[in-house]
Picture: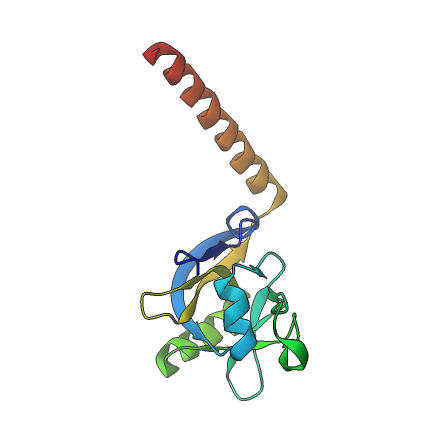
Length: 153
């Protein structure tokens, strides 16, 4: 069994400006955790939203079916409940409703006790020119690293 499971949402930091992060537990069924331990999950199109009872759910998170699951298998794109303190939930709900921010999952990992956890971020969407600046900064950094490497050799 693979120990270091860390599934990242690579588009999150490019599309959003992360203002605050939280670590939340996630409610999973039997075959879901087995599939995650095999690294068969995807966070690329997922987001979080509140239901009518004030509970936080992650939507559009892809957890592939477990290969040995037979008819006990789960739905790959089901909504999954996130577990946070009431104080954190109230704060997040207030931020989302008043200032128009969104909550996105940043990465999914398994902690040292074997429990699946999700790092979520309170985020504000970037404009197109912000994304261009990000690409420009990344390219200049890459070019500087190439120059530094050539001088060291």
